[in-house]
Length: 331
Image (cartoon, rainbow, N blue to C red; front, side, top):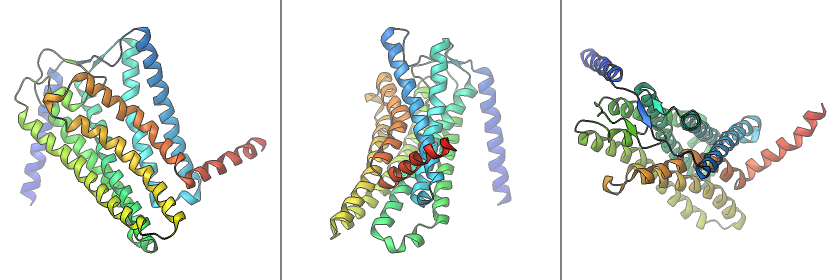
C-alpha cells in the first residue's frame, strides 16, 4: 500500500514538473474575445457587464437572505446558498478578465493563468452538476417522505453532499487543467473564445489528442448524464407522488417548488450538454461562444430570479427584510 502511494505521489510530482516546464517554454495565449470595438459590440459589452453585476448582486442577496432568515435555515436553502455561491464564483472567474481584455486591449494570458481559469471553471460547473442532483434528492424526500424528512435529509448528509459536490468538481477541474496544458502547442496561440476552455484549447495542440478527447468525453458523460439521470429519477417519483395527492393546495405548492428547480436544471444542463457532448463535426467557435455566454453569465442571473419569484418562503423572507429596512434606517 505504501509503495503504491509512493509511486502515485512520485508520478504526480513528475507530472507537475513536466507541466511547469511546458508552461515555462510555452508563450502566452491570445484570447480573441467576444466583442469587437464597434458601437453595436460596445452596447452588447455594456449589457453583458450589467447582467454580470446584477447576477453577482442577486446571488449575494440570496445568500444574505438565507443566512438572515431563520425559517430558511433548512437543508434545501443551504444547498440553494451553495448554488448561489458557485454562480457568483463562476461569473467572477470569467467576466472580470473578459472585461479587462476588452477595455485594455491586452488579450494575452499566461499558460498558468489559463490553467487556473480552466480549473476554476470546471470545478464550478462540475460541482453544480452534483449540487443540482443533491437538490433534486432533497425535493424527493420533502414531497414523497415528508414525515421522515429530518432523518432522510439530515444536516450531516446535506453537508456530505455539499462537500462531495465541491470535491468531485475540483478533482475533474484539476485533471482536465493539468492534462490540457501538458500538450505542446503550435505557434498559433490564438484562442477563438473569451476565456480559456479545455475543448477550445486542445484544438491548438501539436500532438495527437484523440485519447485525451475520448477520456474528456467520458468524464463529461459521468459529470453530466449521471447526475442528470438521478434528477430525472427523483422528479419522476415526485410527479407520481404529487398526482396521487388529494389536496389541490398541496399539489400546487409541490409543483411550484419543484418547477423552480426543474427550470434551473433545464437551463444549466441544456447549455452544458450542447457544449461538451456535441459532436466535434457539428461544433463551431461562434456556437461555443454564444452558448458559453448563456451558461456562464445569463444562467447565474436567472437562478436567483427563478427561486425568488416562484418560492413563497423566499418572497416572505424578502418582505420581512424590506419591512425591517425602514426600522434600521430610523434607528
